Image (cartoon, rainbow, N blue to C red; front, side, top):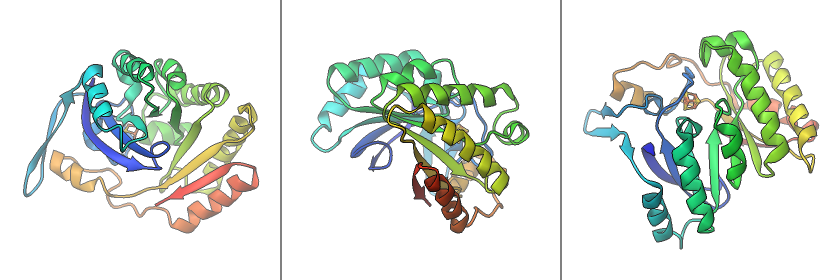
Length: 256
Ligand code: SF4
């Protein structure tokens, strides 16, 4: 499996403290992406003013299991993020199988756009699925020029809502993409559809406010973030969106 980083988080990327593997390569090109080194599947060098860092290394399922077992006393499970982890479908499926045999709790964050998503979405114990926009013009301009992805993501999220009992929909709230009432109402309507597909009728949504923490990485890669100078939506915008979702029975958490 090809990764670009590892890390830890608590009660954000799954229940409890998680060991996280960030898989390299993504089929989207979100112009606000906070991890530009995640997008290319190739190894890249980040040149910071005071140091260099390499993004890209290989790790086997057995090596992951060994690290997880060594950390077992202080982690609750493992989360796979990216990049887009489902692009490495075979390697990830083999890793999840091995972890499951060893009773390790697993989670994944995916952009829900690939053929591998359907199978992996029900292999993990916990799933985070991104929902960016349902506006086809904005999607083509800011995420991926292939408009078909909008319907693929929609269908895959419906599948996940029906078949994965631990599902969290992550909506990055981005200036000019989904911070207007019209765009948010469109997302709200779709979240209501997803709620109706849940066996317990409950949908969890996380609203993640746009940030510029990745700008330094763009510079280190010799790239320019296309939203470098865009002000993130004010927090009140997310609060209003959260109120609307809550009023429709959707459980919401705000970040940022
Ligand atoms: S899907 Fe995620 S990793 Fe891929 S480009 Fe968009 S924000 Fe970055």
